[in-house]
Length: 426
Ligand code: FAD
Ligand code: UDP
Image (cartoon, rainbow, N blue to C red; front, side, top):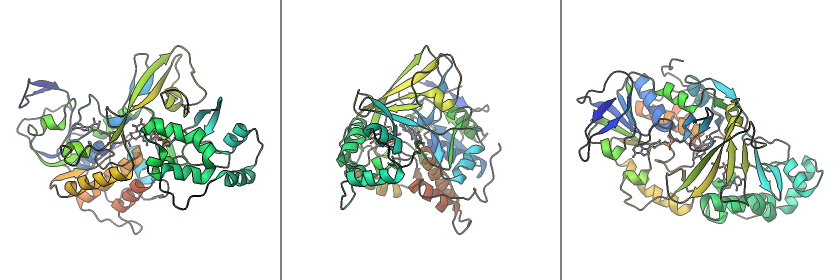
């Protein structure tokens, strides 16, 4: 524990991890703002591979960003900021993280409460048969959906994506109201990418994700982050916002993973980020619901209920659940993908690109609706770029491989390991 005097206000206590103390005269090679996937991975690479001295700060009281998990007062492992399921097609990202955690194989399943039934979502053959009391096979279901689909000439919005594929009735039962609740916007006001995340199937595959690698960190995300950051070159400062400490911590370069509009004092206006309220409960019985997650498109103010023991595999006589209530204000959880927001982000991006010595990465700083693996890939790419590396592997540099994952996890299946970089100790 060290005491750090702020320029204004009373001195406050910060918890600094790693045993050796931070000398006030140290100049850090890098100050990293945010200890989520983006900040932590870059910190680890800079410290281990490049032997840089790194200070990573977070305004929260913990590392891990939104993936943070902890044992609650009943001893059940829960995800403070909602369910986080790891899935990726990138062998490179999976291998990288495997240096810091063992895994528990886990395939995610979700049910949606529609018309008084709990039905598989993504919509699949069983969803259709049970909803309509039919007994279709895959080819008949294809024909059935073609009959329902309302073909759009150009697919621009989240409404177009679904209506074009399954027609208006299924769109209204499964997507319209969930999306309105989640985003405070009609699907017609959101980019196609939002509802495109949820596929439509006519087979019986009821997995939420189809990625090559699907697993949960065996001992939880927070343990994995502690391992990532466990290096003598890395100092971790918690309960400290960038604004408070920026002048007190001498540094040569800055890596910023917080909201980009905040960094620039909202010069071009506030970028909308959607927030959530998480209501956690522990129930005095071993099982609460039939599946890990149940979505409620049309009922209640919450969107979904998650029961953590399905995700973690923990055995316990009690069970813990979380309800997610979307809201406009509060912690920024989701960038809102729509044209006007992208336009505003582009203005910030131009400013960011012309700000020397500062690098912006992560979901908030690049205003991208990225999953964890995409942020991990983005961070590895950013590191490669910082190194100025151009190591060719199979015709592609590691940076290119990672960027393709960040751009589109589903389509890219990079098969390279991290080349010419010192591998972290297990
Ligand atoms: P964050 O995790 O947001 O970390 C940024 C950190 O920076 C935060 O800890 C914040 O406190 C800190 N910070 C910001 N500004 C400042 C400042 N000025 N000073 C100091 N610190 C600051 N992804 C999946 O792959 N699978 C899932 O199942 C999944 N589920 C999700 C469920 C929910 C409810 C949410 C919100 C997200 C989910 N995600 C999921 C996405 C995942 O959370 C992100 O991709 C990932 O956490 C982004 O990492 P990051 O480092 O970019 O940002
Ligand atoms: N969605 C929906 N109904 C569902 C599930 C998802 O309308 O039952 C839409 C909704 O707009 C949601 C988006 O698809 O925000 C992406 O869903 P995903 O489960 O990927 O959301 P996340 O886990 O990122 O919150």
